[in-house]
Image (tube, rainbow, N blue to C red; front, side, top):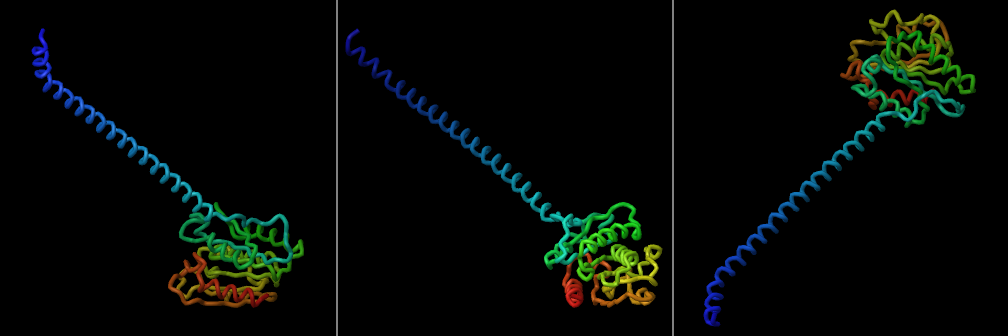
Length: 267
């Protein structure tokens, strides 16, 4: 074959080679594009997974931190008794007894308020069929432990709301110590608990009664306290509030402030 013939063949193949080169380049570009898209989708999936994991971690941290804040560190009766500090027993209402401490009644907030005021707060969540006079025996034993350790009775305050107030009155009836302080928050005149009130004639203690003017469940303690023969001192505060019996469901200034003033006056 002559050189001229070879030249013609090469010239004839030129467009074919050029076309094939373009097709190869296009396929290469398509492959790279598909690969980039795959890599991008992979990156998006990885980022999504990371965000989901981060969201779950944040939720878990928030959940446990919230619950750790809602749960008290220690409101139990101390094993080592410090005679120099003030002790505050708090007896919650029937709502907490049946619904638990994390509902509408801010039980732990109330405890923390008194703890922040310098008291060693002693309290527990009751549950089950609680008879006030029987449960009061437990508190009486705890108070006697404090007294036996040398704690001054003036440094012991026993407070209760509603059914807790009835228990506090039972404690006073059993202890018969005129120097111990009692704060009865809407705890008198409760019709459903009438059989649980003790004999007021032998009641002894230093009492503050506080209740809301709009309370349709509880009322004044003055008539009941007037039955005591001797060894009792009492003061009553009627608060103007529309919250009724639920006024003491949270540590509001309207009742916290007069209670604190009364305690400090007695000191």
